Image (cartoon, rainbow, N blue to C red; front, side):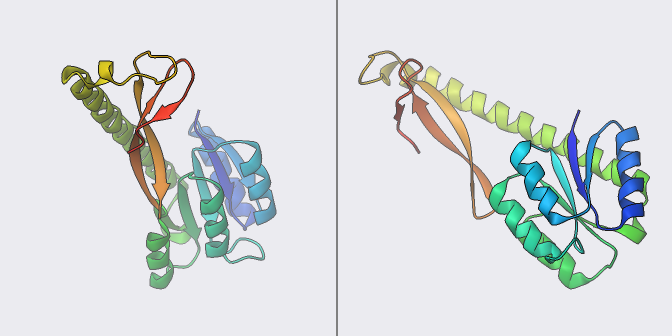
Length: 187
């Protein structure tokens, strides 16, 4: 079950969206202020954060900046106003979607979230396939048996490690000894 942190300022909107998302099969954690967001983020991992731009004492983009420093959890920004400057800033901040409350029904929000999670699965399958292709290529060319741990003298394993730099994800190739866990050839 996907976990969604729902941080919306307005009590009624938060209750409605939380109920609809729960009925749609998501585990929802509704919050009304920014302090609770960071408490929850320290305790557990979420699959999605829906963040109200008008939440609490900080401006929504300041909260978003703090969230991005602490986690790589995808964020949907939620607003009751449709301002182009907010939409543009959201895009620049790397959020996955910008939701304008009066223009979206709870059912449409559920649909957006389901489509978003399907895209993640599709992307992950593509990455996994590419990783397997890379491993197969290295094995077929005979690289892997020749890369041996300097301590244990056993063949190294090749891993792809997901990294994040300047709001962009990329993968780093790492060779690691399965026995002593020494790392070689970070690329």
